[in-house]
Every structure is written in C-alpha cells, then in structure tokens.
Image (tube, rainbow, N blue to C red; front, side, top):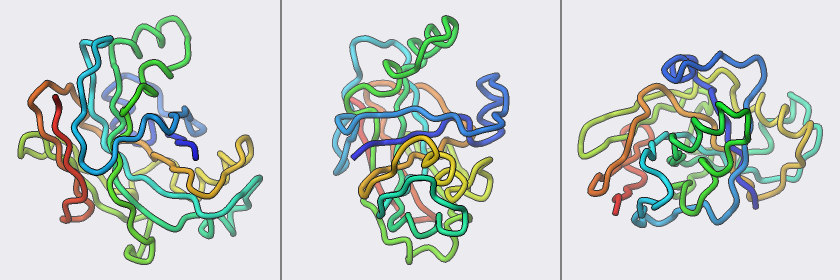
Length: 203
C-alpha cells in the first residue's frame, strides 16, 4: 500500500504558513514505514528540532483505479479514519527555500499516525465530517471536510490521472489551521465528531 498526502487543502492553513492557495492539489507521498498504529508512542527524531503536528482525515481506497471519472469516484472509498502528519518543519523550510522535495521532512518513520478505520457507511456525508485534535487536553485544531479546497472525490479523480490507486491505499487529505510544534511529554488525542479515535504520546 502507499500513502498519498495532500498539502495546503484548507485555505486558512495555507495562509498560516504563508503559502499560496493552490489551483490543483499539492501531492506528496509517504512510505508504509511512516505508519504509526494502535496508539503507539512517537519518538522525537534526532534529525529535527522543530517537528509539528497536522491532524488530517484519512480515506482508504477499496478498488484499483486509473483515470477515475467523477461520477464513479465515490465507489473508491470504503473507510474513514483520522491521522497526524508529523512534519519536520525545519527540514521542510530548508527544502522549500531550495526548491527541493519535502520527503525528508514528511516521510520519515512513524510520521503518519493513523486511527482505526471506520466503514464509510457510519458517515452520512463524507463531505461533512467534523474532526479535532487535542494537545495535553486542549483543542489545538478543529476542522470539517466541507472546508477542504479539494474534496475526496476530486482528489481521487486528480490523483488517478497520474498514479494508479490500489486497494488499501490511504489518502491523507490535508490539515486545517492550527498546526504547531510538539515536545517530549506531549499527549495528542484525535476526535471524529465528538468520538475519540486515537491517542499518541511524544517520547
């Protein structure tokens, strides 16, 4: 499986990092070794001094698809979860300044927290899912998929023009405003609607 992640998919988040609002989805990849499951601890990497949290709704792909048409895009998702895209912001900033790819800042081991995945039938409308992230008991991010610049159907259509989607692939759909640094000792808790779906301690 592969992890396809979307950058700058919420207007307010793009603005908080002084990035332009994109005309097309901004895509980067994470390897399967980035996944951090089962509420396991995240160990602060020695190669960065400025790792940030970014909470994101995650969709699981259930069919192989290439050049998916808009009218069939909804058939390619079977489950929904929540995750954190941990980002080495110091490394990302250096690479952005040099016009280099983001992978070292985004794709390192255990940089993709993932909750259990829930059947999409649990959600009346995939384009209206509220979610939030608490840091040490205080809400630091809250969002709703209705505010995404590119909704999940649009992302499936766009991605599949370039990359074949396969069963089990995960799409991390971007983060709302409120990203910030993590520190050893922090505890993060993710929520879909009002339901807790993951926790992650920083070690």
